[in-house]
Length: 460
View (cartoon, helix red, strand yellow):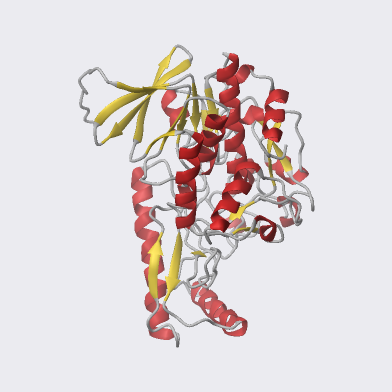
């Protein structure tokens, strides 16, 4: 391979802070707010011009796993409840109590953007938008700085504790910390996908909507469309003057720009194939249009850090409890076929029509379970242990969001946004505690951390 030698140069250190949070998604914005509120000088780095991660850049909605499985009992409050109530105040989400009977918190992505702007500024977080993390500088086993690129050029930021909330464990990976990737037997992660909003048609009654869903299912069976479900009329979001559909699927590696590029092309093409069909073939949809597609395709799985403990599928199914619990989850082992097979089922290898004919079928694959073994016990939840936020090799690194230490099955449950926000609040609080005590996150008293989280309204 042809290579080019990059000349050595001195980089300006533009910030020296206590806690550096890398990534402004559900695991990142909550970490930054929690850290700053607990007195740590906190910097939040985000590549887009807004916060929210896949909640805004991916149009992913609703926020899942805020209640126990098949229950109205809340299991995540704290920062999640606060931002829900603040979105409700500006017409962007239901009131908190109204969300408890629902399977998720529906919201308006634009309302979430402005609420997060306000919350990070009120907490005193230093925010750098339009900023890309390009490398990590280590001093022995510790991270000393992250290298960033902005319109101002290449710069550095130093800190005492670093939180990897990139979703893809970019900081851990670039620091040389051990990581895992996808399922054990072939390293493939779950398929990517994108939400899109459809408008320009009259409201439908349930009977007509069901007829149209069945019509699209038949077209899928005939190979016309490559969606994994026929839910093009799903609303999902808080406002109902448009659909917010989660149908697309692309099997690829979310760590590779080439695969991300092809995923973007593929899902947009699939959406427009649907729109053209609806305009030509379905009465009342002659003037339907794509109101928006998500600014980026949504990865579900890529890298995970390696911590002292990896959350497993058995933890999810058994509703496992841990002495060092710092968050709760209730979403199920929801694996989207890593090969991107376009069948109308969430489950990889459990109900896939290809079954044993699939080239990647394996008798050792952890997710070969019956459907009933994919869920936590009714009315229950599973704990996220603090050990899953730590790195086995970098003592001043924490993970927040979907890149925590977990198996392919474990992260299939913990990757959803309600759980990620709870994990992020815990990571930020732990980072601030470590700074306060003058130690590494690996050395803090977890029971003190748990008490701090309770004081801040979280359920642990």
